[in-house]
Length: 149
Ligand SMILES: Cc1cc2nc3c(=O)[nH]c(=O)nc-3n(C[C@H](O)[C@H](O)[C@H](O)COP(=O)(O)O)c2cc1C
Image (cartoon, rainbow, N blue to C red; front, side, top):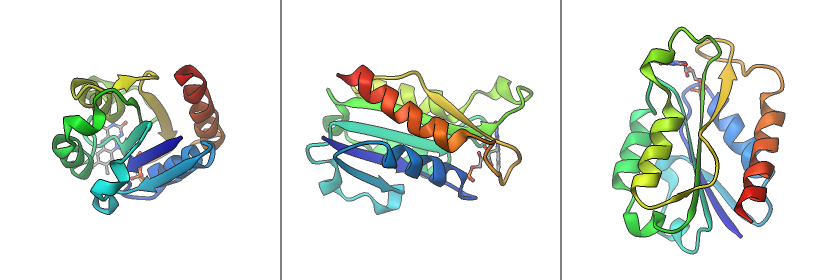
């Protein structure tokens, strides 16, 4: 199985989550920032996971650009999932979050969403992650693979 995880990260928290997810998935796994993805990385991908910090209720510009340029031919018919990092307070919830917007975009391009968008929580703007989030990320990865079967 070939998995591609594309993430952005300003302060390193989303990167840690992306790598924890990647480490829990068997087979060929690539964990890349949008600028590191080559067209060949999409070849024969079975699962595409996209993650971003939530900034202003949305994914970062790099992830938004990645999604808008992502060809439908890549996403159509493959399994997709999304995650984000965000504050653990509910106060900013009215703006929405990155993961839901990523999931909508992947679905619109024909991807099969195999999990609801998943949040991971940071304690402050620059982190750190809340305790247990890396373990939860690994567990989430294993669960979504189960649902894929
Ligand atoms: C400009 C900016 C806007 C942000 N907006 C939100 C927001 O709307 N909702 C939220 O929950 N967190 C928000 N945050 C907190 C980020 O989600 C947090 O910085 C991120 O999870 C850290 O991940 P990173 O280390 O991978 O960059 C914002 C942070 C920044 C810097």
